[in-house]
Amino acid sequence: MSFTSVVKNEASKVEATKTEYTSELSAIINAIGKEENGISISFENASVARRCFSIVKDLYSITPSVSVRKKYKNSSQYQYVLKINKEKELIMSDLSIKGSTKIPNSFIYADEELSRAYLRGIFLAVGTISDPKTSRYHLEFIVTTKEFAQFLSTLLNAFNLKSKYIKKDNKYMVYIKEAEKISDFLRIIKAIQSLLYFEDIRIYRDHKNMTNRLNNCEQANVDKIVMNASSQINDIELIKESGLFDVLDKKIQEAALYREKYSESSLTELSEIISYETGIKITKSGLNHRMTKMKELANKIRTNQHKDKQSKI
Image (cartoon, rainbow, N blue to C red; front, side, top):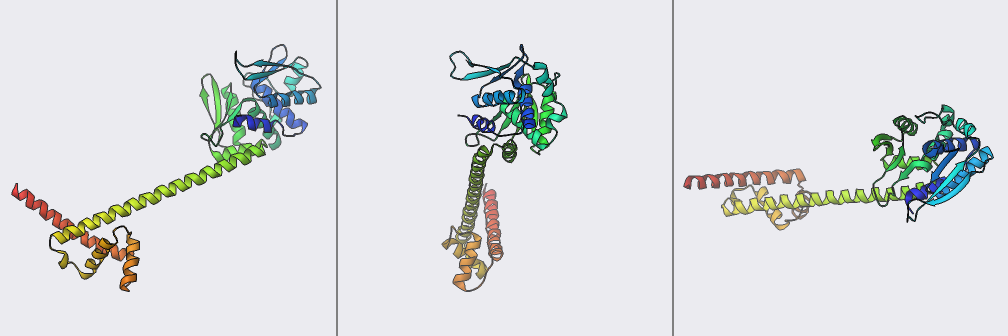
């Protein structure tokens, strides 16, 4: 079962007031209802179809007819079709379903709870959400008009969900990408168990990503230490080969000998070793200064060697 189905199954069992049911039903019929000798609504989720059936029956004392058919030929998926053959005009007016833009009157989403109910209805009708365990964070709604996409995005952003919309084929997709905002949406529609699952996975992934970043950073630091130490040892070997080691200051000679002895240590570790073994405190910056002086001499030797080669050509 997809995570979308799990969320819809939970959201379709949320208890609400009659006015909230009105807002929710308005969203559902607005999004996927068709005027065909009454009102026809097609669902792919049985739990959502049952909820819609119950809401219509409770609000209008009308029992919709129900039919089940395969989504495609030879398909294992089914569609559940509800048909309301009575009081079409009353229902459409009561739910503020009118016009080509599909934007309802403000009384449908007049306060926070009604807005939550309307968003729950839209999700039950045309919403999909990616499983945080297997893919990127993504929540989307596919709607038919640009005006309704703008309206829905505005309604979502009233809860600071940072939704956006784009044209997709001949329809429009309203979407949310941020994990925290998707969590907020699940809280808004009161899908609490789905929210807890989503948060558990999100926290695990965030922790794993942070650990990976720290490991990568640590490895980069190790590589840098090894590279710097290797370069310093090369400088020492060059100075010794040139017979100039003894002209170095005694403190620089000491640093060079310790570098050769502890070739894999960082400057911080090496400064602590020298301080402990000699009893004379030396800081990382002080040790780095000695290594810099040694490198300057090594570079002068390399320059002179290069000049000698050039003069022999």
